[in-house]
Image (cartoon, rainbow, N blue to C red):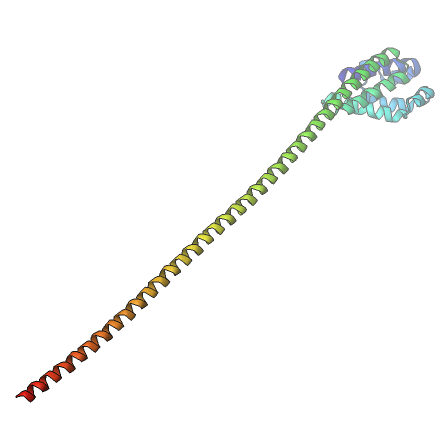
Amino acid sequence: MTEVQALLERSCFAHGQTTFWEELRRRGWDCPESAELNAWTPVFLEQQAKVNPELVAQRGRPLSEIMNSLRHLRHTAVHRIRVTANRVFQFICDAENLSIILGDCGSSERLADLRRSLESTIDDINRNKDLLESRHVETLKHLADERAKLLRQEEAAHEHLLAEDEKYQARVTAILESNWKSANAVAGDSLEEADSNVGDGLSQDAANGSSSRSDSRLGMVTKEDDNKAL
């Protein structure tokens, strides 16, 4: 940027020497290094009538806009301010426009070469940026697909877990019901056996009681017979 600034300062001084040399003498500018680029802005605006209007019209921008842009170029170059590639490209375009307006063919050719080189570089940067963005989009899409796949797998695993748990609970319930039925069957058989045993005991007790009474009556008859005999 400093080289572009120095190139334009030489173009401005050369044009001033041939167009409004008296203004340069009044200001004491006797060499290109006498005035910085931003100092030429008010001079050209004052002497705009002496600048070829057709060349200005062909550039498609007013001379004041071009000079104001180049004033920022000088500020950027001196203070080494970081700017975007597109901003630098605009600086170079305006520098080329000014050199053409001032009729400096040598400078305009050099600036045109620089502009084309920078334009090619910017195109490469933009293509690379587009490629990176495209890859980034593809990566995000792939990750989204993988997340969706993992989510489906997680849901399937959860459903499988619920199904297996339901089957297990059904088996446990069936086992418990079977054990309950078996326990009830065993308890019923034991109860019937106990009832049978009780009935048999009662029958035996009744039989024993009847036999005892018969024996008692028999003893009493025998005793009466003995008494009669006496």
